[in-house]
Length: 296
Image (cartoon, rainbow, N blue to C red; front, side):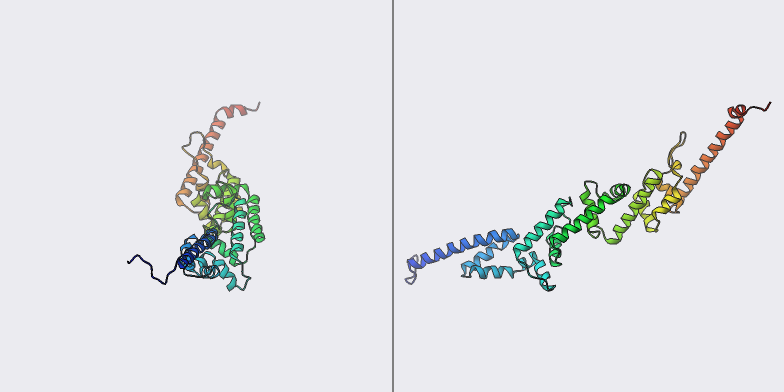
């Protein structure tokens, strides 16, 4: 007896209920496709429940757009409203995101740089157009192409920036705050510049610690060139010597960074001067003297 449905539920009612459920399933599939494009497919279950309860598709969409998940995913839309900018649709939002990513990918900028939803929301919320994004990336890429080759080499050697491709350097110039803060980025550029000057003057760059210490002291590139010019020989090992000083040791001695380096450079200079005097003495007292001969 308990299996017999109540007398007030007719077969037509059951058919209507089944049709409503099917209609809800059809509607939720449409919504699911849209949510999948938004990256919000986890809201599909909530949409289905609302449709089964009798909500219209329009009401469901409105309710979903008010959800915390939707607001977080499209936070740039609210940022635009708060800034008094024209509202845009989710489709326009996603189109902008896609164009930003394509622009940076075309410039070789590595993944993980400016491609998170928060990064893109900031662009959209600040009304950065596709044209402006292209201009920014192009300017950064042009800066990479115009920098001193030695500076580029030192950024790679000291910090590993741009080792894989120029896109890393483009990202570095595009936003110095991404990965390194402004102060650190300036220090890195200055340090690499000093090492670049040493490479041009001495034939080799500095170690990272030396380059950064010099940059921190405010040493300028021209000072590196002026004060180290003509001293390349002391960084080259001569026959019979255990070793020469490195470019970093020479700079540390010249700019007073390390007392041990100062002592080592002084010792090597004295050793070479003494060696030179011995060689000159041999020249004068030996073959050199006979070569001079005696006036007749």
